[in-house]
Amino acid sequence: MSFDPRPPMHPAPPAAPTPGRSDRTGRIVAIVVGAVAVAGLVGFGSYTVLDRTVGDRPERDGAASDSKPGGPPPTAAAGGPVRGEKTWDAEKLGRDHVAGDVDYPMTPPVGGNHDQVWMNCQGDVYEKPLADVNAVHSLEHGAVWVTYNATASDADVSALASRVSSTPFTLMSPYPSQAGTITLTAWGKQLTVDGAEDERVDAFLSAYVQGPQTPEPGAPCTGGLAAPR
Image (cartoon, rainbow, N blue to C red; front, side, top):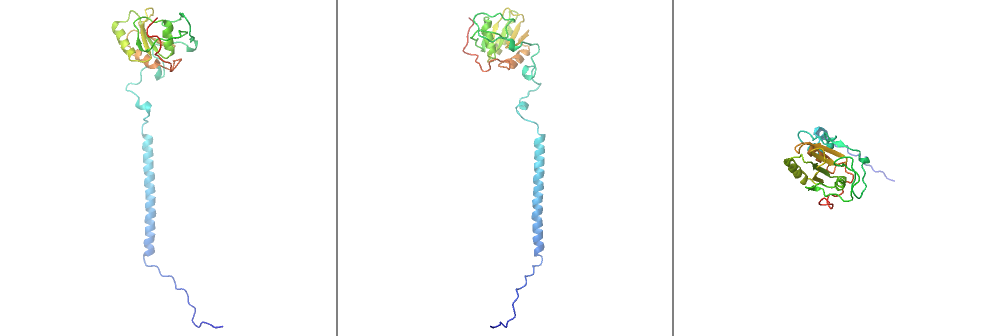
């Protein structure tokens, strides 16, 4: 057994840090951390400003963009009936198809049992009176029926004919026995005016041409009678 006469060797001590190196490292770390914090604050501030801007922006949906100066006309679509209109209980108006005439309780009729064939009502203007039973069927399809008696002026008749001919789901005819000069009739709805210039004419058409009162929405206004029987 032998012994090594050399003294035992010890590991070399760790090298002393280079002066200033740890300080620089600490400053770099601090700068990086600070930059990250600042970026986070800037991002949060931008989000807050953006969110507040969006929240404060006025709503621009269809209802807002479609609004017109002066407010809506006095129509049922605006939340109420047209001024001066008369209304009947639609549930009490018959809807059966019958042969022959029907004794309607109002003139012109606003609904009730009717003939199985309707009058064409795609803006059709008739020069002769119509059979009630055919015109009522048109009302069931969502049409507005414009009628006038002998007291209506030629100018009013011409203006009404122009308005009707450009409006699908309407029809027009003389009605000598009606009391009012001009009458507009939809299913369960009726309005009488003295002249075509009355703003309620357009209001009634806007409200009730294929309006919510229509018993058969989607039914056609063509394919019926093109002339009174």
